[in-house]
Image (cartoon, rainbow, N blue to C red; front, side, top):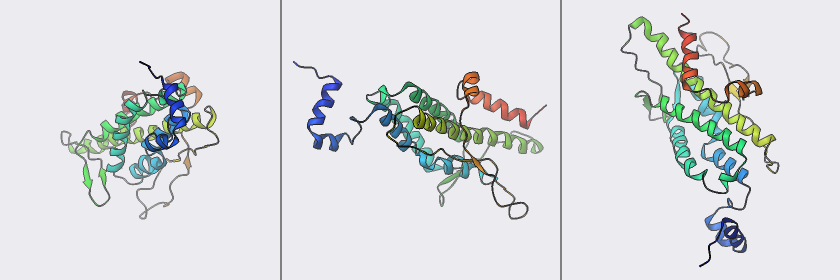
Length: 239
């Protein structure tokens, strides 16, 4: 009996390009960094992240999110658990893997918060409007509570873009990538909900959030839902 190791299998595949191209779709013979980054970038639909995590949730007073995007993210998380444990992805640069794991932690909290309430679905646009249950509160307290819950969810969307940019920065600078440079994801901080009644229709200029060295040294990466929740709550209820 002869037992083949992974290197043996790759050597064999190189001798049979037709089989390799048919069944493995150019993933096994490329670098582990290429494999894990490309899987993350394509499976989590990063190219549309600015629209789905910034423009859609923030451009109107009511917070909205895409049903299709949520499905894509849930599917990505399920596939990642298996995919990342298998070579060649499991042999990727550890800093890159850690950054993707950080992105995934934010994603889990984001999905859970989106599913926290029975949201209103619009079949025409395939979007949900974040619909917070505040019936347990007196009428005069409902507005602040709604802003508090929306603020938490919008912060999670922001952190998702921030963590994605951190991954892209690692890819562009620390990981050899054969010139396959990726652009950072822009974030627009302020939209004018009241236009055209008052104000300028133009949103604030976009910027490119990412982790600073100081943040990484002091907090690690994602601080966690409890920290974000407390930070938003303290702004809404300063007393």
